[in-house]
Image: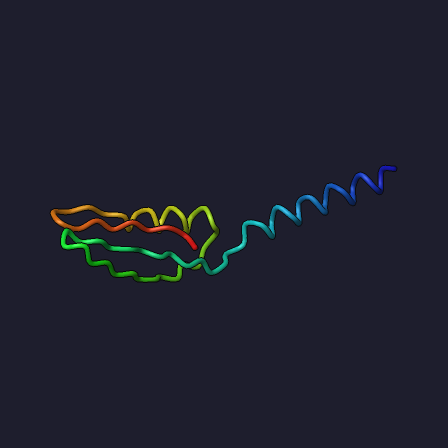
Length: 73
């Protein structure tokens, strides 16, 4: 029983370690201007999903006549 518990603990630690690995995430930003035009840009961020989401959110912006909304795809 102790061997099984120890094995289960190591398996759980391995799963946590693998889930936080860096992966490629695509941040898609759509810029809309006052005239109704839209452009879309994509940026690849290699990091954990949480950090990639934070970086992508930093690209959101709003200025006179234009709005940029970004999200991880």
